[in-house]
Image 1 (tube, rainbow, N blue to C red):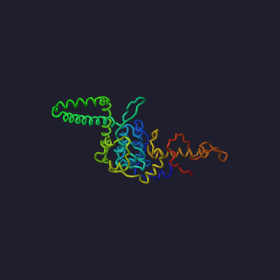
Image 2: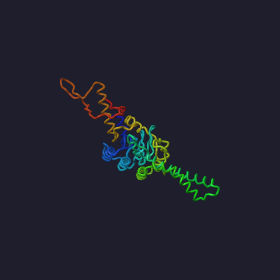
Image 3: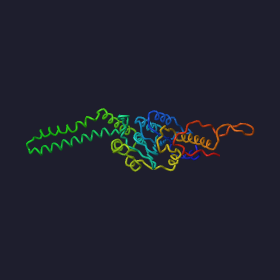
Image 4: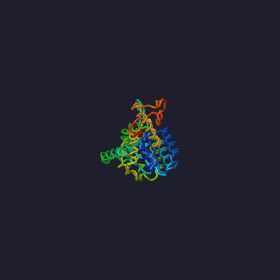
Amino acid sequence: MSVEAKDVLDEYDCEAFFYSGEINEKDSIRFLCEVLSHRESSGQRRGRGCLFLVTYGGDLHAAARIAKAMQQRFSFFRLVVTGPCASAGTLVATAADEIVVSPVGELGPMDIQVLRPDELSLTRHSGLDTTEAFNALSRRTFSAFESYLLRIVQSGGGLISTKMAAELASGLVDALIQPIAAQIDPYRLAEADRMMNIAAHYGNSLERGNPRMGAIDRLVHGFPDHRFIIDKKEAEKLFHEVRHLNEHEATIVSLLGDSAFTPERDTVSGAVASILEELGGENEAESDVASGEDDSVVEGDGEQEKKAGRPRRTSKSRSGTSKAKTKAKG
């Protein structure tokens, strides 16, 4: 780890963690173990924790596990949104005491995605699609019935009773709506409704006062599209404590590199200090290769000696992290 990185982390008021990638069961359990077992080098336990999170979303239960890990480990939980933090990532945000949004950071609605089979493969769609289709059909059914009823009564010139007009209107509406209603799968409707309820329940159980009144319900049901961008300005309408990056956080983001802006395909997670230390070592090894140096033995005063301070690095470097600053060589 570079001297600058160590100084920034020492001065930062939170114990910092980083998660970049899909939120899934396997990686959330790894992250849970990392958070609950991690201790500072001084052996002191801070009461403040921070998670730098970038994700397109994933599993609701895994997201709740990540949020609970931070809440259990720390009395104060800060979430730093460095890039997209959508869907299940927004569920984690509802559990934070404070949300920090970078200039390119964005939350997303919690209308959770469900699988839908098509002709070739499984695709995901918003849980609101099915429920909104049913609600729209209900509205259209009532509107059509009312329109038919009034027109029949008016055109009958008083010769058609209200009861008969209602029966005729009902028949017309049934002929119009029934083929459409038959395409709605009641099981998929129930699945979508259940998933939305799970999202709302987790949000209400995890929140510790930062979401404004009605914010959870709005995040689940109140946005017109799953890809709707919730930037800092929009987030301030949903949460009490929202701010920009401070100097320390901006430096940490720059040191983490591209994975702090785009979710990694192979999830990167863990303590920021450990990640930066690994990145520094990997980049140092890359610099040795670029300069024609390696970790092999060299001759010195007639003897073969290993280069001091240059341990062999065998870990695979992660994509998107080459921009992290490397350890200064003296």
